Length: 74
View 1 (tube, rainbow, N blue to C red):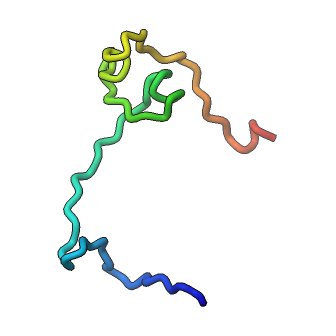
View 2 (cartoon, one colour; view 1 turned 90 degrees about the vertical axis):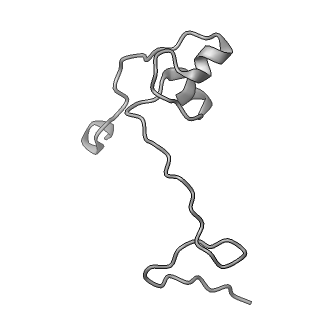
View 3 (cartoon, one colour; view 1 turned 120 degrees about the horizontal axis):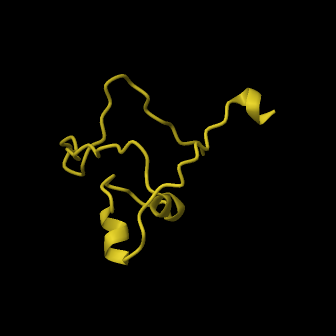
C-alpha cells in the first residue's frame, strides 16, 4: 500500500544495468537574460545568448534586482 524511499547514505542513481549514471554536471550562469527567464529555458550567459540569437530577439537584462528580503516583502 505504501512505497518506501531509500535514503541511505551514498546512494546514487543507477541505470537499468546497475552501473551509476554519469550525467555531466550543467554549468550555472550568474543571471539569465530576460527572455530566457521569461521562457524558463537555459541561458548560456553570452550576449546575445544562443537562444535569443536563434530566435532573432534582443538579448538583455532589465537591470533591476528582483530579490526581496523577508523584511522588505512584509
